[in-house]
Length: 488
Ligand code: ZN
Ligand code: CU
Image (cartoon, rainbow, N blue to C red; front, side):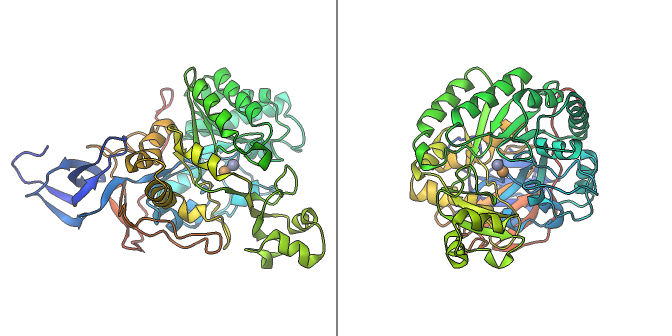
């Protein structure tokens, strides 16, 4: 608490209701910011500032942390990151689903889904250090913590991906993981659901991930199967975590295809039971449709399919696959093959499962947004306000303090983001100010790039980056590296 002497802050957020990201009940307080850090929280009447923001009738929360993104290239090529900043997101976890921006070679052709995020702003990065250096040299509007992707490692190491890696290839991948760890990667992700890594054995993954163990870096996975074999996939994931003795994150947890509707009643108790013995966390996006590369296998065409982007048929973006197939006079799977390569939105989940997984106390919020094309899944622009507006305020799935914790404090703890995710003196001043009564997602499947409503102000490391619907142009994001024991 400040003493009698008057302090002059860089920024004073006055009269707001603080939800601090720890799940503690809200309280009234002013917040003083100086040097990019939170300098004081309390009654700051009588103190001055370069700039004062009136936060009366507003919630003042930690900036949101997007637990699951594919923003690896977007933070360079779309550095102001309007689709995240406009939601109140101040930090993104990149490098998910086995896909990362580094290490890659300039001359290689990338298979789907690796090419999904490949929009190099300044050429490809042959080392993880070069990628993080580029981000430091040309900062984004958001903070970035990045992982190295196993499918990317396979693509850069193996001449053919339709088999398990040899001992030499595993050794080469291990060396690249070590380089990424030394550069500051916070973990490694896998995407064994996808063709480039589908043939990787559990043993290959454990061996490639060995360099994670010494640093207790994260193992994060888009599992082999989120459909009929979801329980076996969870078992494989937990086994990898145990053998490496590292924390695991189950990405975008879901149970998909109608035969599996309701199975979150089995997966969540299994996850909870496993949490008693090892470090496990999970994230989820608040929609019943997923989005990924166009593929006709694995039951992906069972429900409604919306095409987001197609290289051979760009004119089909935003259209229903059923309509395209009818127009072409071919079956749905044939139409899907003709549209490849590209990306699509797949309606394969049950609302009850989505709500059960979102409400599970350990579930973090992650968008899984794919920042490419004009018809993305609306989660890219809407995830966080949708949780605050639709699921918290309208449905009452959890209190606002819990909703905020799921997108801040919980995520910072699980990913080891030091001095972020909660509002406390000395922490980085990443702050989202919003109107709890009106915050809502405006992005829909029909209008997927409409910015959210009710996000008043977004501050990144002390810099006002979003205010009343306008981006300030500030690019004050930092590269967040692992606060490990083995590296400094
Ligand atoms: Zn994924
Ligand atoms: Cu993903």
